[in-house]
Length: 202
Length: 361
Image 1: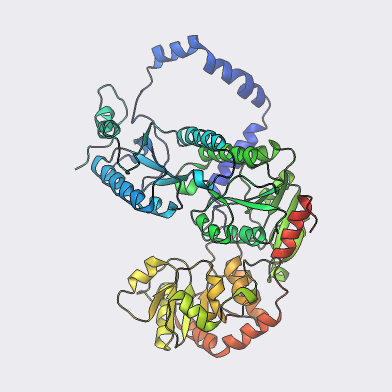
Image 2: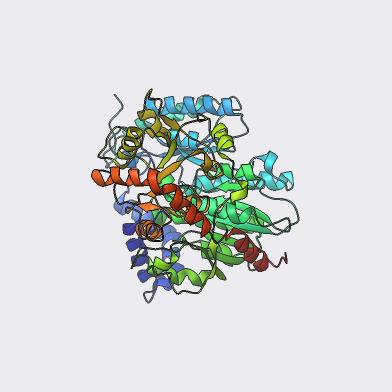
């Protein structure tokens, strides 16, 4: 069974109809890039609307099924890379991340691995992403390095990550990155935010 | 182990959509392992079960699905398109095969980025009537449509009936001669060597609740002295210390179907064809909650042809009668199904892919 979602399918068909409207191409290819690229218009928008800015102000759907917090849609996405480690180290890393997750309840996580333990990542409550490991790469080593770079950029862009943490070879979270993670909630409660933010964890 | 790049043989990129089970992935693996030495299969899958293909030495990559990420599908499409384009430009496949009933936007752009790549839509039939027909226009994205056959094709009333497609026989990962015998299968699955055992494969359920399909199946089989094997750990956990419920976790389970005397199963494409082709006496309980797959028609056709039994629900008296019939008549029905087996279509499918890749076998 394909993941066929009737409501999403209706939205897709609506979008397809919109894409066929006269002027669609001009709007997308000419008008919108000009608007987006205009420093003057951008400045005016900031002055007039003062859009809420920072962590915890924009809603988006992303997996957060272990988090028992109000407004999980406002939590930022954080990408954790756990690469080049053995199974035991990945297991330790996931235990660490689960503890950090449950303690802070301040992010939604993606864990990028180069091992086949996708289900373990999911069971820990995170979205799993995968990079082909160097030892399974048959091409030139520099091609693999370039691939890893592309894939990490893709993870940041594709998941619209707010922050990236590269775990150490021993599966630990670097101290300063942990500090950032632990400071997310404080940033979400910053004065001036007009969007309700999740309450601090009990 | 995933071997992404390397070797001189042209790549056949096998792209599986996500799904409730492993049907798409298993079907692509059935093609991939029969491509021969002149072609190199490489799987990109939206299924988290994809690492299992390493057992067949097929390189793999994982692409998180919209469901796995929780992203709205409109936003997820960007990720899918970007990852597919990257994979196609990196691998430059001679052929790209997408297995699914709903080709995702972005696949077309990815294929277009590699002009030498021939695109194939592997599209199972038996769609529920009047469902998904608008997807058929996406045939324009592909150079060919490959339809794995369905033993219930004569009853098919879905939108794919009568459309242009290369149709092959029903596709299963394994051929009968690759399967274990009863004793070997029970050893492989860690099951007791003696005594009747049933495979119960009905998706998630509550083993302790007879108003639930799984619970009703376990209760009816247990009352008749038949041990139960389930494939989902969550179900096995409910059994606690009961000795008559066993968890079987092995891929592919079809290799060891001989371990079971009978089966009570949903009528998804893979289970349906594996059970019938390999002669496992089966009571099908079709899942009518699927969005597209017409399991009810498939199961009822098998029953009408005298290959298996079918019942809409096991809860209530009809369920007990159906289990009695399974234990009584199941073996002779399974024998009839095996006699009607047209063979595995996977080799013909692989031959078609080889032809499209320009490799003469």
